[in-house]
Length: 366
Image (cartoon, rainbow, N blue to C red; front, side, top):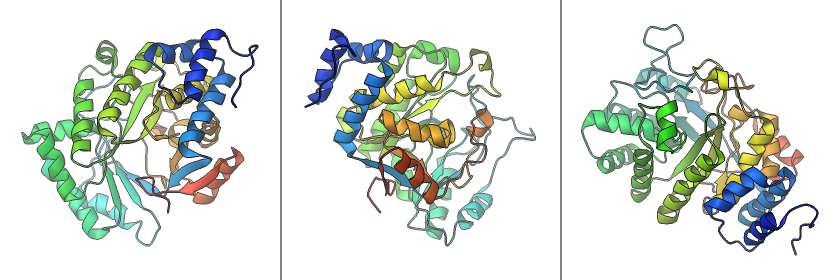
């Protein structure tokens, strides 16, 4: 049924394509070959085949907003454009009342999810953060709380002197519904020492997500790409995610996050091209055969480029955002005040040739 011309691909790529068409898992070496040697149009064809097998013609979105409690952080990552020291005019450290004021500003508005993430605060322990979730749930019980990256969780759990499992179970009892995928960066330990030497280790990131899954808390996963990494680093990163997903099935989505160069110490390396972004989406969709969704995070890429990524394997475009995140705008994203209404999201999806589907945070159709 699916045939590719001999003039388009060589024997090595053809062999990999046949595995993909047969829904067989490709190995790390084959993943690296797709990155380095496969024509972009062929990659698009293969990735689209996989995304249609998994998700049909659907592209998902939700109605959400973000809360970024603070940009104070105990870490000093070289790629970060977000952290500011206490007292800096661009720093913020919102207390519970200020955060709840943001939540209340959406009263009467049809949003289904609040995404809470920010810096790893030097003082806020797990009780502080758990109480915040309780207050949000008390005010709006139906709101799905996706909160705290593994980096933030590691920090608050260590401050509190408890185990990862006990910390996650406590937060779940407070009303935590899922956790975002941030802080994964790139898992290779040698490279990690160059770009984020102080940060939570890759093993700890994976352990926190595996423990969350065992506690019935689903999560997402990310990868920061387009800096000092090689294709082999990307494949290694995705292999570790794929192996964890084999064990737990707890990842809802994978989100490639592009390194943006503005306002950070690594800016001299520049940024990769849009073509490289699309290549990365395609290989991720093919390689991560057990993670159901690939998300094009439009505040990072820009809305029109997110629409283009749908042709390269992505099947989720995130949500309305409502102008509530600054992480990527501070790093130079074209979306300086990210907000889209559902009509524009649906337009972008339909123009790419797909059917828009509004979802909840667990990918159930609304």
